Image (cartoon, rainbow, N blue to C red):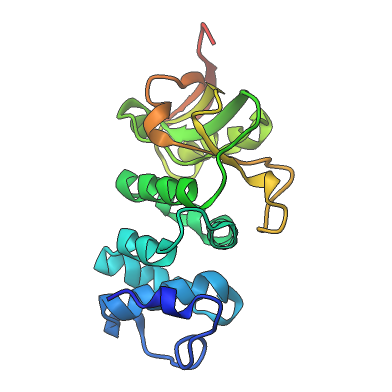
Length: 223
């Protein structure tokens, strides 16, 4: 049962910052409640433990649905979720289940106003195998110099082929511009955009490729 909407605007007693049970003892309901608490009270929350429990129980989508329950548009909740995402979401969600990432995109679209800015040229560093299989993370940058280290980092640090991707993102592809929400822990130098990975498929091109074992950049012709 999702009880979060009953608590919205109030801090539940005895859930955040008081218990020290290991996450492996939490059930789905408790984990989901803790997740909702963490979004609004992250400094007092053991967020890393909550995320471990969410992935152990595979209840990410249930947790998002519980948090987002209520009005179709709720900017306060949307900003809180975005702040949580900028702090924690990039750790493994964008490299994990595409279904989870897509559900996050749909939740952002539900809670926040549609992107109303112009078309933007964006870049992302990605694993070549993910690009070839049509799986993409959410975060893109208009700054090639920001995205490039993520591309060659796949090769140097992870031991897999990495690619620098480029896309001409039309407004319908863009879920939001993170920098439009200045109070959500944004990194101005990255100027991050969140794209809908379902719409990226077939639209992103490879600018450069770093292949193991040498990890030497190879420019791709025609880009």
